[in-house]
Structure formats: C-alpha cells, structure tokens
Length: 113
Image 1: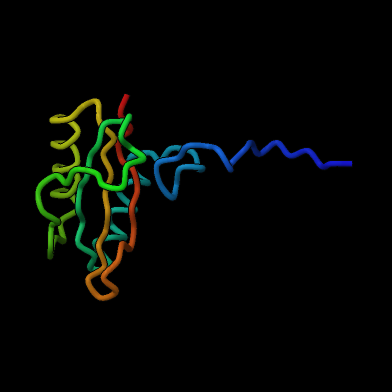
Image 2 (image 1 turned 180 degrees about the vertical axis):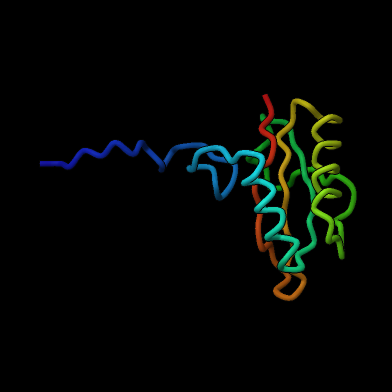
C-alpha cells in the first residue's frame, strides 16, 4: 500500500530560489537575510528578469555588485529602485563570497506578475 503525503509534488513545482518552498518572507525576514549577507562581508548584487524568463541561466544585473557595502539601508534602497524601474520583473539579491568565489546567498525579494 502506497503512503500518501500532503506535501505536494516538489519534483515538478516551479520555484525561483532556495526559499521557494517556504512561505514568503516578510520585510523583517528579508532585512535579516540582507544583514546576514553584509555581516559575512559578501558583495550584494541585485538582478531582475521578466517572469517568463525566470528559468533562464542569466538574469540582468542592476548596476554592478556593491563591493564593500555595509549599509543595509543602501541595499534596500537599490532593491526598491530596481523594483520601481521594472515593476513586472522578479528581483533577487545575491551575496557573492569573494573568498570562495561563489554565491553565499541568493533569494527573491520581489516576485513579478
């Protein structure tokens, strides 16, 4: 007899990022994630893409990565500016770890329509 689970079909669910299976983050949780990126010394970078192209390999970068940025407010302002400029796009924040030369964190802040 097969066991039934109420979890849904995660093999085919379309998600945008690591936290995609969790409930949407509120403003405080997003700020905490950004603070974590900054506390680790990772360079925040903002990317955006139309929803139809979200599963492409590359998203368009909003400005250059903010190397050496330590101000949470500055990152939040840039995220908001990107969202205002491209209101229909998904907007995500990536924290680049220059030591490991990889992404330390990556999550969607605004989901497009």
